[in-house]
Image (tube, rainbow, N blue to C red; front, side):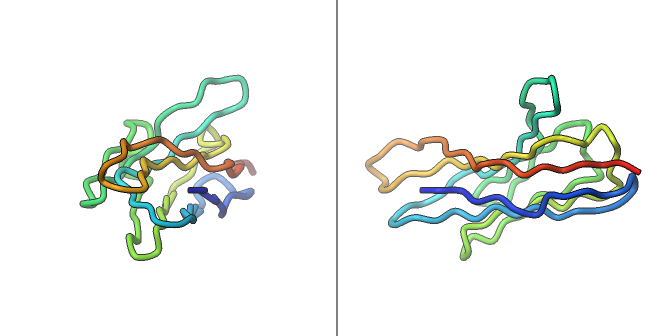
Length: 120
């Protein structure tokens, strides 16, 4: 299973961006999907997750500004980012727990990252 993230770019403070991450492969199911980010010189940090039942969890720093949602039919997770701040600048990585059959354990897969730069 591979994850392909897209949607990053340069945006002014207060602006919006929508990231997407599509999972591809054969014969797999997905449980939790999420977004993490890594700013220059900092460790990767949690941003948001969403379960297969659409239960969402957010980091305090993005709650109320970011919304995570998913399209289970398309195996895609999105991150709508509003009211962006310079401190949101980072490489954003998508993540998913996947397995090829109910007999297998869930395993974690990461996307390649997409750069979001918030600057005037």
